[in-house]
Image (cartoon, rainbow, N blue to C red):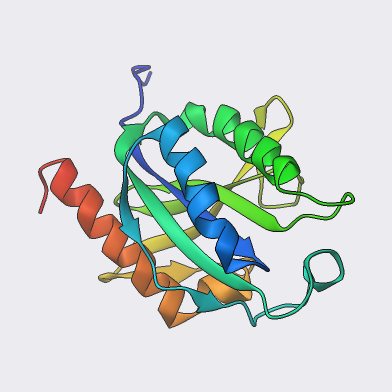
Length: 175
């Protein structure tokens, strides 16, 4: 019989999609107030892999990723997803989002994303939140699954997560 134990802490990441770059400092300030200092900012990336958000958020969307210095326990992603949903509403106008926040976390072996939507590859965590293993780390690189979103499959995104993983490894004394 396996021994039940607490999981190790993980690295919080949040992907931000917006139609207004002027919102980024405001959003990041609120995220830092809640989760502590940001220790990684990705470059701003054109969000070109899908038009899923265009009807609600408009065209020429931009994305960036941030990670946070303070490590979290995996179960905290439930409350974090609820908070990011509240922030999305705060920045909405006429029931349309101006910012989309995708929280998740990574450790040495995988990238997990939180969602309010169920799907075949998602596991229910509680309080309306699901989790998905989106990428796994093998042979020195993050690798996609058949269900991984096209943007997360891109070398650009996977390199960003590799950089964040390196920061995480230093934090836990493995780099």
